[in-house]
Image (cartoon, rainbow, N blue to C red; front, top):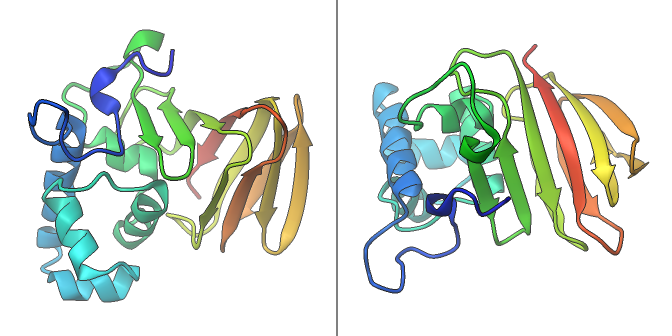
Length: 205
């Protein structure tokens, strides 16, 4: 199921045949460069605003690396977008109905996080559904929300998950649902013996 979109692989800059960067990474790099150019920012200015090094930003824009979830989260914060909005902007043909087999899957192999965009992509959407899977023992942290005050509903379907927000930890078992307004750093830890699988509902303020 998670490998149903082969061009969404991450973690390698080129495939075994040397065919070049992943097509999604390439489109994402172009879009990131466009967003920076629209604001008239240099790489140095974006580095100061995002806290990401110039070299990493440059390599991401040239699709020489696959950006991690934490990196995209920082850039989304600078550009005032959720991650789904950013990823929808590199989809070729947004639709009202997206079949399960066609839902975009994005993987951050560095953190053991897999993200499925369940909602049909649309740059102007305010609410969206995301399916997340965090490998057993994986730990992923975000230093800021992409949009301050973002509302999140986290419904755990399987495994165990610990979510920390505003210095408060919440332990979730299968079936539990947590609602948050996100203003600062958050941390997700898969604390059980199996992968944590959850539905994330996101609503812009």
